[in-house]
Image (cartoon, rainbow, N blue to C red; front, side, top):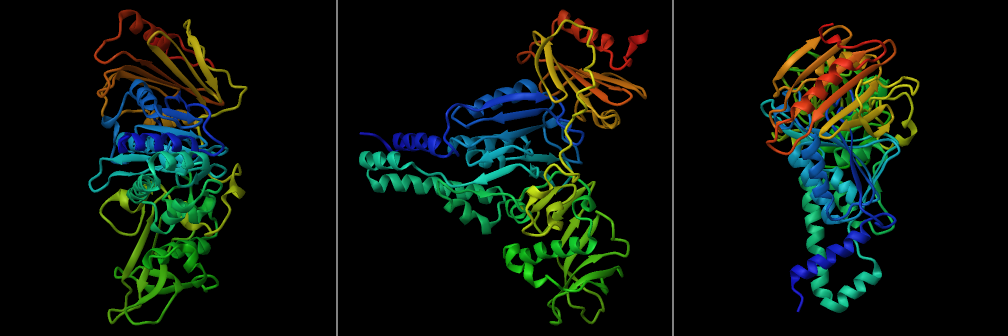
Length: 518
């Protein structure tokens, strides 16, 4: 007689095939793309492509252990992840998707769906695990998941193909099969809540059938799924100052009333914007939209300060009607910071409220705007390390095998010595000069000039030896990261260290080199 454990295994096997858009024909390909994802995320770039199947968590774990040398020691008060994973998958195994999400959370890996990528079903649940960490008091772990306009993130609940469901009922009986299925749905709901997905959208995700999905394609969807747009200036996304405040007020009003933004949007539509509508307890002028005259009730939604126009750093709140004191008290606030922490709502746990690094740009856009309209335009994007294909890779001066090459990135190496080369715009050198550093990793040596730099040492987490080099050319920059990846506890050989030094000294990019004392 088959046990419930065996039934659970068989049901999961059925969901593996069913929980994919178009079916799961083969396993996902997981790879290392580069050691620095973008100027804002100078961490290794992992990529998952294809259907998600059992075993993918272990594969991702192996890539992470091999290529992510700086882990918890690299966390800073400013907040960062240990790696980035980009996702492009039709879905697949429900259980594996949850396992991937758990792995991302535990290891503080950012999740990104880039323009042109599709991440459905099991992949979408894996995406929800995207996390980063700050050592600043009171922050700790926080959500770090981004969908670039033109990328698609789509959800639906696990389901059984008709033939598989009929067979399971014949073998186990309807009561046992549907009881186990209900338990899986309950686990799905529990995880959605744990990942801070808004309560108003959970039921929609759970109810989606095999031929429909809930796709993130409007700012309202980003709000409900607690997902961010790529970082960038508020004014680049929404240049109209008054409309920016109006749209942010819609979100705050929805949070205040435990409603969905679409349900309250009409209450702010067409309202006139009033300068100096009131003042706060510090005497700062408040300008915004009057909502009511009810004494000590919700009076208006306003932005604080006299010089807020054209700025990305905004303090917006729902305020009470003025009392006898002559000023308005905030009821629910949003603080938007383009170079710091942005937050909306209340709560001590950063992963349980709307909280992210840099600007909450989806707050400032119309609720039902189709974000595909700005895909590939001049609006801010992820800005990965890419340059014109006419720019030649640096000459590394060593006989290395090229393992992969794509969009200005190249992976080469010999034995356990891996070299990750990236081409970027000229400003990338300045970024690398200031930020190409591992806070918890002491450098054994360091040399920095106006046109080149080198920093080398050993990761305190993994024990791997590394050398990070950057060069500034006339029209581009090059970042070269040398990593000696050995089994745990095995030191590099003399030959491997000699190869590392030779690459450091012999690499030339547009006439720029380290010279090594010459």
